[in-house]
Amino acid sequence: MKKKQRITMIIIQIFLILGAVIMIMPLLWMLLTSLKTVTESTAMNPFHFLPSSLHWENFATVIKQNDFPRLYLNTFAMMALRVFCAVLFSAMAGYAFARLDFPGKKLGFGLVLFQMMVPVQIFIIPQYLMIDKLGMRNTIFALLFPGLVSAFGTFLLRQFFMGLPKELEESATLDGCNIGQTFFKIMLPLTKSGLVALSIFTALFSFKDLMWPMIVNTKTDAATLSSALAKISSAYSVDYPQLMAASVLAITPMLILYILFQRQFIEGIATSGGKL
Image (cartoon, rainbow, N blue to C red):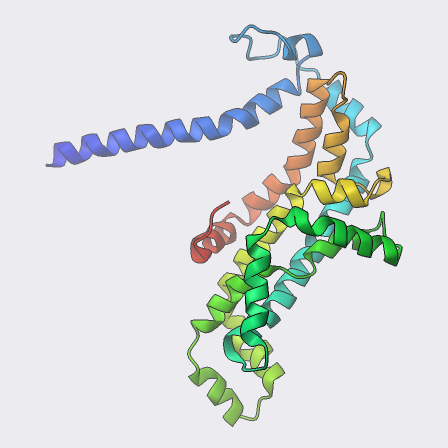
């Protein structure tokens, strides 16, 4: 039995290593391509994997042609504001739907579920018209606008609040707490894992958002990393080394954040039961 278990573990380890290599290969290919020439990057030789020489000038050219400090600022400002608004408003709405009784409660939660079931592209035209009427195009607020309220976050945090014992609220009421004090001081801290999970999902979805930034912000100084990368690709020719160099620069901050907060990231994903 021990021999069979050892063989089984070896086979599992081999498959896990192969899976890890498959996941790492695109990142490694992107990094190596960013250090090649255009001729090397478009060569059809499958064994020509490593660059003949390291061309760091691809990074210098991309940085010179694109205002990366501004792109970083716009992207992370959008992410931070979306995370803050999504966590705050989703927690308030989730608590209301889970623990309070008010007229139209079922109808309101039904609308939240309906918003989760339809494609987000349906809301782009109404949201764009609202931003245009407000005169807020090419601003950080325009990037934030679709993330002011999160239907997914409302549903997720509602489930967390429903799992908390009702005696906590009764004890808070006996101690003289009003609804706001009960929510912020007692109930909200107990949903920390749910808040972390929602923050992670919101940050990742914001970082990957492409369509909305390209539609609502057309000026270069209001662009995000995703929209800037899309504009680097020309309709007629693509400088793959420069495109890959820009991609490396774009994902580096997220990799650093993941390395620093990987424990919270894994706990948040595991607790929420979700997947990306």
